[in-house]
Length: 355
Image (tube, rainbow, N blue to C red; front, side):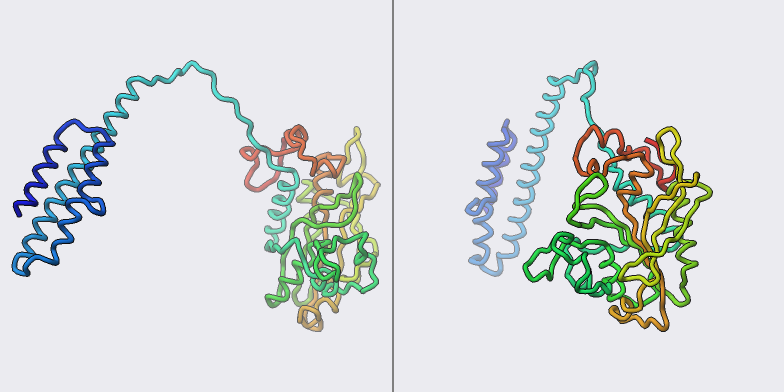
């Protein structure tokens, strides 16, 4: 016990003196390091007579706690003193001008995707996503695309292997396949995302954005499709009335298929949607082909539905007056500063937007 008292008295005396952090850390190491004095005393407990062991251990713990508390208190005192001295010496010049900063903008494509998702969510559609790298089955075969279809050619599709088994998806329709394979009908989804085709000019880009829509249930017909698209177009372009027509077309994955045109006119060099006697094609659609339903193990005698595909970039170009698709991907800050959206000014419902 006398040895413990001697250690305690010696280091309490040291700790009552004027110390800096380096000296305190050294004392801490001398006491509680691997071979420190207190650590060594704990190792001795096993060699002490059983009758004295409990008393020794209790006394040792009291001394250990006292010394640790004293060291921590001393460290806090030194740190507080250092902070107070800095506060006395350091001053903030409140007359200095504020630092300049640049606030980022929301890209028109990101904004348009949010708007589209918001509109379709209002009528019960959920948002699904899938990988950009797809397999040939999901991208073509499951969607009833023939082996000799032009879309499968190398000059149209980016293949990632010689066997043409993996590719960059050419549309977001594979998300429909993935959704139908993992769940059971009914389905009511949209699938926005990046798509890739070997094409590049003022209105085409090797990478672009699409949103696919799918509604599968019992007794779904073309009337439901027309009503859905009519609602979406009016909400997206923020017009009360819309002229819309369906033109017969052909897609491997829908039957019957149609292109959708909307009426417009040009006033003062601007396209006005919903007025005039000119027509503009904006999307493709149709009733889901029975073969597609069979490929995802959905009984076409019980379920049917419609699908549609819309170019997101082109919708953004029409709504916000952008005349070159390639500008979306040029990373020109001046362009983004003009056409982008201030994140602090965008309403939560994405309607009535202005830059």
